[in-house]
Amino acid sequence: MLHLGPVPLRGYAFCIIIGVFVAVWLGGKRWIARGGQPGTVADIAVWAVPFGLIGGRLYHVITDYELYFSEGRDWVDAFKVWEGGLGIWGAIALGAVGAWIGCRRRGIPLPAYADAVAPGIALAQAIGRWGNWFNQELYGRPTDLPWAVEITSDAGGRVPGTYHPTFLYESLWCIGVALLVIWADRRFRLGHGRAFALYVAAYCAGRFWIEYMRVDDAHHILGLRLNNWTALFVFLLAVLYIVLSARKRPGREETVEPGASASGEGDGEPVDLGKKADAEPSDEAGEKPVGTGEAEEPAEESRDSEAGSAKADKS
Image 1 (tube, rainbow, N blue to C red):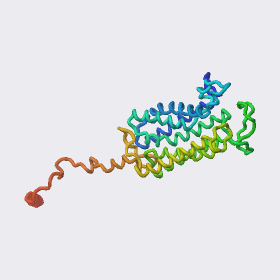
Image 2 (tube, rainbow, N blue to C red):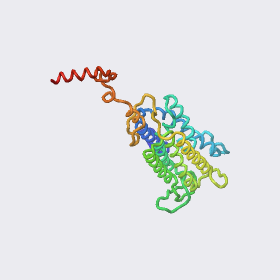
Image 3 (tube, rainbow, N blue to C red):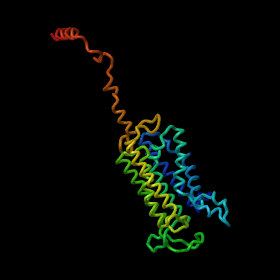
C-alpha cells in the first residue's frame, strides 16, 4: 500500500495509472509526428481507458467466476479492481470500442489512431505488470534462479517459496514489443492498423510461452490454459490482418486527422501529406505576377514588331 499524503493507493493501481500516462504521452508524440493535432490522443483516451478497464475486469471475472460467485465467496469483490484481476484480452477488445467512439466523434480513422498508440500500450502493459509484484500474484514454477521472486506465507495462503517471476518476463517482453513496433514503423512505414496488428501478434507470441510457465489456477482445454488458446487465436488473426491489409492498402494514410497539417517528422520519415504538398506549385516558382510574360504567345507579326523595336532601342 502506497500513501500520497492522506490518500491510500495500492501498488497495483499505481502501476496502472503510470502505465496509462506513459501510453498517452508516447501515443501523443507519435500522433503529432504522423500529422495529427496535439491533445487528440488524450481526448480519445478519455473514452478508451474506462472502456478498457471495464473490459479487462469483465474478462477476468467471466473466466475466473468461481473466485467471486462460488460458495463462500462475496460477489461484491468482483468490483474491487484495485485488488488485481484484469484480462488484457478484454481490455484491448472493449478499449477498442471506446477508442472507436472517440475517433468517430473526431472524424478520425481508428486504424490510424491504433497505429500511433500501439507502442505506448505495450509500455503500459510492461509497467502494469509490476502491479502483480505488489500483489504477489501471477508467478511461475518453483525455481532457485537468482532473479526468482519470493512468495511469503502472508500472500493469500499461497505456498511460500521462490518462483519464476513471469510478470517480470512479460514486462521485459512488452518493452521489446514496443521497440519492435517503433523500429518496424520507421523502417516499413506501417499504416492502416498494421503497426497495431504487429504489436498484437508480437505480444501474443510472448504471452503464449509465458502463460505456459504459470502455475496459478486456470481453465484448461486439451491440456493448454485458456489464455494459451486465446493468445494463439488472436495471433493468427493479427498476422492475417497484416497480410491482407498490406495487399489491399499498402503504405500509410495521407491524412490522419481533419484540419491537421503534416509535421514532416513521422517517426523519422516525412508523412505522405508532405509529398502531396511538394507536388503543388509554390507562389514563388509556379505563380508569376501579372505582366511578366505569362499571357498567351503573341502572333508572329507582333514578335517581329517587338524585335524591331528592340533593335531601335539598342541603337
